[in-house]
Length: 257
Image (cartoon, rainbow, N blue to C red):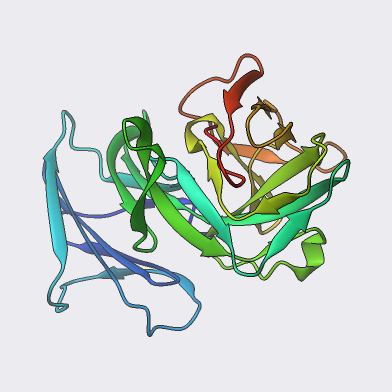
């Protein structure tokens, strides 16, 4: 069973999907699609799909949408979060002056629900509830999601869950001082998702840190990071990244992307 396949859901039936903590119900009623979901942190790691006659689950957050046609085809797709994410390493991390390293960061995905052969968008659902955080100055910042996660320089050390996407981040410290990596803000609008085997990857992010009071240079690649491996594009970035740019750093490793 591949959860990213297309499925037909007859009128009155429920498509039931589980992706780790996310439990998702999708019902078809003529031209109306009814989608409900809830997160259950106590459930074990699992990915599954079933067609059900009824839904007996309580306390579900339901959404309804009327569409133009009556096509019963439904399709799920992994998406990046619709808001920037601020990543906090789960252990102290310092990058000395002049050092450069590639880190692998895991980001929880959103699920896009699409219908029909034209893949009309219905809903976007988070696979896990994330806290909100403010990144930047009080009068010059943005509302983001906060993620505390493991960050590794060796990919095999990354414990990737079924609802997570790997984001490779190349960090180069060109400053004359050591860099305390406490928070990293990643603009997910510039990230696509690529599938290889059972893994989901984003394009690579490059950061050149040039000092606390200086700009950091930000570059997003527009292609799959592991060019020697076969891949499939499953989600195109919400915005196209065109050129590198610089932005001010803050008292620690805080920057906009």
